[in-house]
Length: 445
Image (cartoon, rainbow, N blue to C red):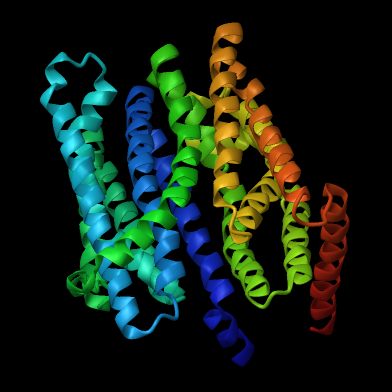
């Protein structure tokens, strides 16, 4: 019993739980929406989510890492200046997005695309509604208070799921109601932040020019990387929407959303691996840093192999369970197989990026992501041009991740001693150790 309680208090376990909850609720909600919406409405909803994700990535990319870096462990006066500056910048970014969406809405009468009209009408108020809980979550991450983060994610996702079920039951599940629901759940989560006393909004009076500039110069590289990553999705969304239509976008988004099964272990491992690598560097132990980098990248590669094989075999069943009969026989299952097969390169690519950031080379990490973005956009257009179908985009997709792995390897090889073979060797050794340890515990029981 005591060991179980220790696990529940472990920050690695709580971080994994947060990622799992987000992913599980995301899959369930996605399944309900795919089954409730027409393909056109589903495509419009995911188009809106893509734009919302892009602007949120700008705000989060600019401030999330900066909040953790400058606030964690700081003395009271410094911490107040940091939080106050974070709040001020977050409010300014939010107001800019609201203004731009308002300008777009003012010209909605001459816009012929229904998806853009939905974005113009709903983006601003949705972005405002997410601010009251977004900044507190950054603060809680810096404080490593994953228990409160877990509760906030539960409130946000569970309330949305319950209301969606009610709307479906009363036959009121429409695109407009879903957009309203998104705002309502954001506001509810913000109210819970008030209850948790996690706002710290009063610190805005302690912000100063020096801290604002410090956050700006640090955040300009991290935001470039995060928004570039989102451009992968948004570029594909635009290409499919304007060349193949929202129905095709709904089909392509289904396997994309199912890829969250890979993101669960990947997301939690990135967080814990990043902190371990940073600790090693802060102790000037570069050998330990390199070993941790190899271990996490290799171990995670072998860990997702069973998931990849399972998804390849049961892709048709997964598409049917999540999307329903109307997606059976579409390109969704085969596109999922292509995506999940090349996800075997995700761990090495992601940890290449983390290693570059930890070595104080965010500019090079941004260049890596920018290269991948150029390859991705070019491949999307070539796929549409030659194949005139979703298979074209899926065919050229793997070149994106391959270019990132090669560029990351090239840049890191200049600075640390490692090879792709060493990553796989250490990963295999660590995998055998983890399996043997788990087996011994089972045997003792």
